[in-house]
Image (cartoon, rainbow, N blue to C red):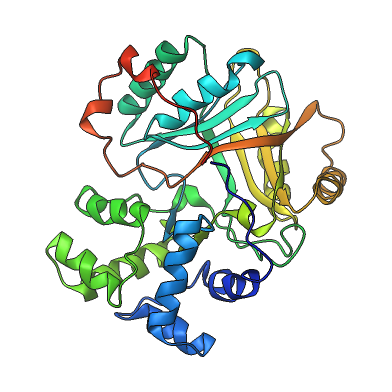
Length: 351
């Protein structure tokens, strides 16, 4: 079923709770008590509201956003799907647990999704399985360099306001093999109980202080870009979003990408490897409440960053089929490790 934006009466409470805690979430034994004091509510009321926002779709989870090079494997992919098969193919793609984002966009390559996996071999096997199940070829567009990967922006504006913080994620330490179990819990989401970090510690067989210390160390090192509320922007009225792609000469692309990352309004910016039939290497995203605001932000970025002379396309989203957390550290369910044509029998659903 298609998710809908929050009703106006519930929006102030949701914004007051989720917006300020998209980053700098309190790393203490009872974090929801801290949120409650800030709101002048009880912990029970805060937990009830968070559970309602989670079940309603506005809150994806409370968890971590890792650096692009923290570990695991991820790939942006696209398919040119015949219009009459779009919903059928979108359902097959969305049903794969390794797919965390799946959108229709305005282009011949009209279905865009992100596949994540524990490692590169698992990712490629998953992609081959999808191609077999859908009977369609998929573009593979691996990331070369991230300039800004962080969707934690102020939800009160029509597009992202001031430029978000950034750092060179190439320098961030990867998650050690011994810490992958904790990283997987961050992808799953913090339990909505009074002492959530204690639950994680119990699952890992360690002390809660160790968990909290590791999270802070990851944040300090840049391995973890942020820890906090991960929201679904569509539910807050950000129904217009566009991916703009450019074909920039290799000797100029990193300098232009760094400039794009400093622009207000840009929510994501990165360099990707081109593919046959898809020559673009510089990407940026703008999320907004209406198409005109997004178009104005894109035009400003192109002008400010001297991108007007390069071939480019603007791909607005048409439909959101799936949006959930990545699986870079969580292993796929056993029945998905070996792709098979029987998995094509899935029903269409919009998440």
